[in-house]
Length: 276
Ligand SMILES: Cc1ncc(COP(=O)(O)O)c(C=O)c1O
Figure (cartoon, rainbow, N blue to C red):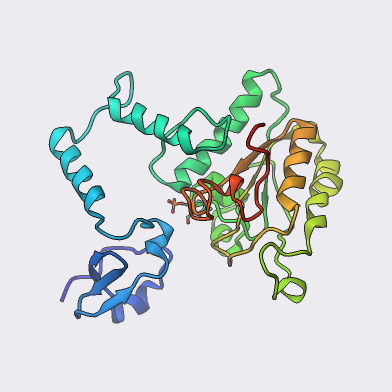
């Protein structure tokens, strides 16, 4: 019996879990093996992050080779070829125009970094009035202070005070009454995007807003697919007022919606023509 006392598990009911632990001990292809020897179909690819399958031989070999060749190199004032190769490979599949890569260790750090870059971008261009960040109700952007501030899940926010200053939230688009049986993108709710301009920007003044952050498909508070034309409207409003639009693609990027990124997905999320 393992000692479960010391590991404080994230997003888990620790007391219940530790009374009856559910432990996975191996993984191959689409299946986990539990500690009592059962094969369990991994229908969600881990936390949507093992989409190539578990223990893919090419990935295993690459990790083994790299660990043996060079396990670590400092990234400050020094570099190593693989980081540059990875950045170039990413630009090759990223939406056109996204051609600079800043690596982070996880989604939460990536989100906080994106928010910081948005604020700093306006400031270095001499537009330091733009300090507000807008998120959405039901949005999930990780567990950093920036992410929980722009995020819209009450349980993730309530313990941590007011969060970062100057944040507001757009209404979510979930409408089960009207959209429960939609095929593809729902027909109702596109007008909620108008509230960004008519309500939030009218209230705060567009010149104070640095960025709007959205998930192309909301994930953690229920998978909420954007209404038809909704993301395009947000894009147009951001462009109109010089506001940056951040797509948090932690769970929609890397082919999960059919295209490389949700921003270019052929399922109808496409926000820009690829020639923009
Ligand atoms: C949209 C989105 N942003 C950020 C995160 C945070 O990523 P991480 O758990 O790697 O910190 C997640 C995690 O599921 C996510 O779904």
